Image (tube, rainbow, N blue to C red; front, side, top):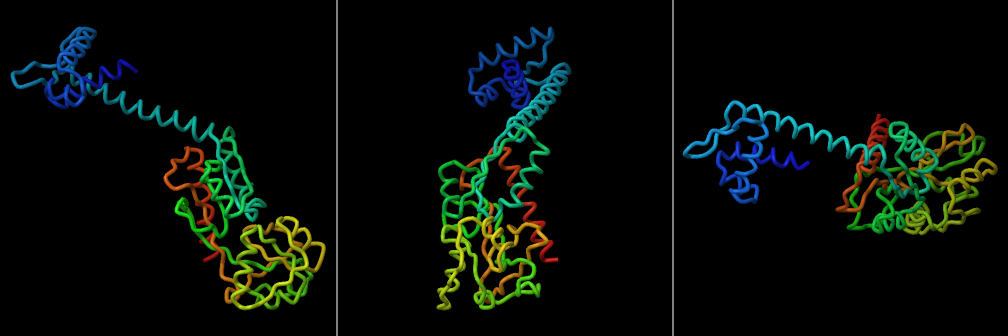
Length: 302
């Protein structure tokens, strides 16, 4: 790359029109810059500048050389971009911390789609709920977080924010599965409940809403595993509360949105640590996630 530096000196002298002004901009002495120009002219076997009383001006040979220098600089920029692409997108690594609700379908589908394009990119997917996911970002254990109801934090830089309405989930044949429209929470509470435990943001959201109304909650089964609760729903006439994006496409399952008068929608975000520069691979994956969530939000509006 040393010869590129020497050529950049020629371009600067051409731009400045003066050895002295070019030397000041390049932070070298005028005599050193003069020697660099003379060396290049010696290699080419011809002068490239006209020495004038008021400065330096390119001659025809110099014009050709400077055009070549600019072409080389553009080519080098492209090569640098391709090298960054190779090391970042194609051979990089993405660490994602995400709520359980997203690991059934969404995250596996997005990782599969990304790796179909860039098979040498590796992934670490950590199942972390809202508080732990933010902590993983702060500790540089994760590049990105995909979570529900994140705690207020100045360290979070949201890349996407949307909403998910909680659904009552039951098996086909359950009394509540006779309808598809919104269901009131009080109608769910008369049935046996299989609910997320207090390690999950969904349960905090439910408890907070019921506490405001002075309603006491009695669950039949509690678990920190949404997958376990879904499997239990398939085996018993119990009702679980989960977000729609985490419910798999299973003809044996039926879901109905909880009336928003009873439970407000939950906030869902894709975020990174504020001020952190993401790798190319992580930034591209974030773009992919956000694009999917935006498409999904538009389709729900439609």
